[in-house]
Image 1 (cartoon, rainbow, N blue to C red):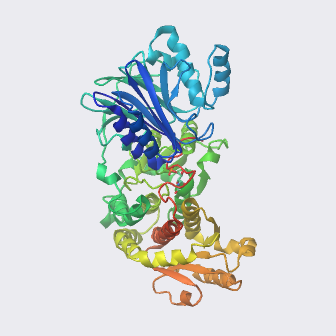
Image 2: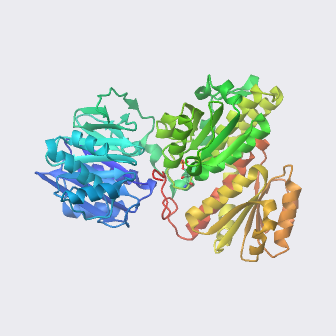
Length: 610
Ligand code: M6R
């Protein structure tokens, strides 16, 4: 989704801003721009499309100066074009603003400003905010105070960076519902919506919280609350290297991230169990275990792939720990007026930790007194900070828009929480130890599947002309079917639906013919025979079948057109193995179709607006 960078120091800001914007490209965007102060003027370059187009235009225009702000825009109000791209000027070009989020009452504010003689060039809510700031700026020429007063009138979400040609020694920033971080350098400072844009320059950062505002100069900073109290903020050290953000020799981040799963999973579970006691040990949950275990119920809320992990979690908690669970889309939960009390636990799962719907659902659950637990990848992100407690999944940076390693690490984290709760309840020591052994052996089994990459690529190439796919699984593998279908949709633009396999005969079976492949997740578990019956039903209608099956399953080869064989593990961990061929299948189909795998159209890595 939208990205912000800003620089103030002694170097030419243009290449620094462009580099920062490139590091935010993975978030998804459709136009970009930068604005730089030089010799009493604010100069702006904008481009529709990629940052590389902006870079060429910036070089051609020779824009330069030691203070500037840049932005990648993912269109919400107004189509993606240069006029709507950020930064936005105030009417008289005194102020320049970049903004992530949505100003919900922009129409009322716009009418107010038109009444005061302001005019507008774009269709954006951001230009309204630029002029509102200018309105207050004219009162006393204090940019920080003008931004503060303007924001007091705003309903909605924002992460903003503002510069003024009258105060070219500072960048003013503010945050509410959209991330904003300050990076501290030596005689230079930075601002960004995401630490990825900063770590080439500094690892010392200050995360702004909601309703905080401040400024950076090249050698100082000030942060206040929106009600004007000066704050003493903690400086954090970012634990991430630049190499972790590079493609490491793979053609796409998505493939790199799929291939990293043996390691990312090991990072998720390392040091998080006590072998001889057959129990998980999760530092983030210390002191909260009994409250979670004795909750009336657990609700797990998330969006997209994280929601699929939540569905796996529901199965695990109910099956192994005997705790009733409900799973809710965060976008629905936040508006449903859920009945919650302090006796409920609500778990929020998010890779980015910045998903607007999930964050809003979290705030609602907190407001109602429930215990909130975050299962998050990005350290220091909004959801991680807003939760009462939580567990980081430690999957490492996930850059590809299609989530892969985060999903498997989310499921691993849920399995660890299940192990903890189930052992506190009535799971035997023996089973606890068995699960730990299975966890330890899992990375090697994941690697075994990844070694079949070339075979999976061949299968993908054979199926890549299909226009529709069905993904079918039962029990704990139904969410895996949903996840496989989502992966294919997102990056190959092929329509795919996930269904519980037995539901097929209640409708989707009408779609089956020789052109519609069905992907069955069919490991040999308690309902394997039922899944075989479903495969027979598809074959009887000339449908093509791709089965994800156990490596010793010869029976399935007689039925399926293609089968991808995987090792077995404890049932609790099987979704981590069955999803991997589906990730590779989607990846290779999208590559065969020549599509932009890492930045699929219309999608954003982190959906920071509703
Ligand atoms: O960062 P989050 O896990 O909160 O993101 C939730 C969804 O937006 C995300 O999983 C989305 O569905 C991905 N593109 C899936 O690949």
